Length: 440
Image (cartoon, rainbow, N blue to C red; front, side):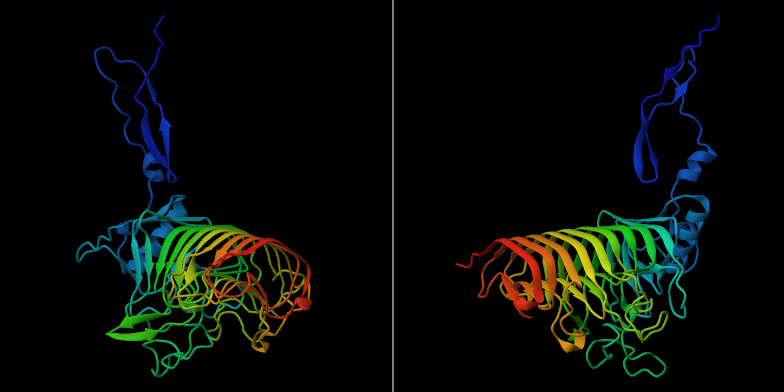
């Protein structure tokens, strides 16, 4: 009878979908010879990632073609560090327009540097279901963006526009489009760095974002997602051509109305405006797909709680607002609600010269934002483990009910750990424990 005993090759790593698996390949024995590795098959080639270096065109055209090819073949799209071009290799990928993200995408950024060009008036990347003239945004699913190593997304050297839709270019915030005929003279959603709208099952992780033109990351009506390991580096102003220029609305991460069931972890750095903001602001006049809003989707209230911000956990925030705003801001108006939110672990890392207005600001009594919201519109918040040297640590400027604030330390400054700016009459069933002012 023939000997059917088989020997195994040494264990070799195989890379599949970004993970290294240890596999053993069995082959029949060969007398007097060492086993030879198997020939590379079509299956091996199909599992390899697709990069923009496989395509021709501008940098962003090549990236978008790589994404389309990856989706068509079920592979990963990877933007590597080295940009191999006909005119020579570069260490940067220059974007003239947005990278378009589609359902089913895993986009990996490996030690790469993405930078907006001076001709670009668009996002770093956005979900492909939205944009100029798109009034009916269809939902998308399963979009995942993963930065590996020293991945950097950086604003343009000479941004065409900065700030939100309420800011005029050249008067309140910088932009080379200021005074140019035929071009919008205010900021809008195109200034947002990473923009997702109506996306379910998503993740964004492992990115450093520097000198964003407005909000670095904005999520509109997104759910069942994860955001983690983001580092922000902006200051509210920049030196451009030897002059100090104002750049407004440089928030880090923004959750807009309709965001739900999202986990946020490990947010660091500093921003020109709020480091993290949850803002549900209904404005019926702001329609989808226009340049008159900082939201690409309609800023309305669809009713039945669909546009509430809800079921969100935020953990391990270490940073500050270099522009003197807030580390975390929660703001809801016009009947939209914020509820069932966990905030666990927020440390103010500001220096002595950049004191934030508040570590956590809840609501607003300013009539420009609709004034104090009715009791019950902001409820079931658990705020735990906050260490702050801001002018206010927990600032309740609107209403807050059925909530807990615990384990708070205020230090290095006057005032109380909790400030009831709108008055204690706008709180209900608010439980506070282990609150300390440890200023020397």
